[in-house]
Length: 228
Image (cartoon, rainbow, N blue to C red; front, top):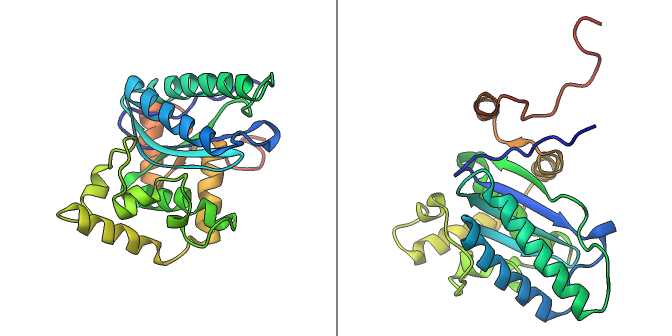
């Protein structure tokens, strides 16, 4: 069965997850994280992707970005993935694949799910019990988004800029979003949308995307087709 084409539209945010092959590690030392982030910033600019949030876990990566065109994200992930694999294989004298096939992604309805996706991504280390607070994890965008730490990779989404009249107000408002954890139903919805290559939004948003793309953007209903 052929793979479903990715659901991507220009200037609509995208949540991406890429896992290590068989959930094996893809980062082994501090230097690996630094190098991946350096190349993420480089290839995001080259391919027209605006990165809003990220987290690098030991065996997978989450990104929240807005692509300039329908090919931007795919080109960025290909360039970044290939170069990083070459680096890992050369550095650790290994061979073969590092990533688990295709990366997973979902289109996001900004007004409802942008901040939710920010929190889902940056709270990953907390859910994994690596840290007690996202500010304690060095390989995510939280310190930049929440505390203004210098970061050459990120560019705020317009909704982030609407959090306040200046950076201090925005950071305070952003940190306030993290006073409560995400509920399991929200986490499950994000995971299913991303793993299934579906949209993350309400019914109206899904219908708009389906009309633009001319194909299904939500999970099909279970059961036998009509007429049977």
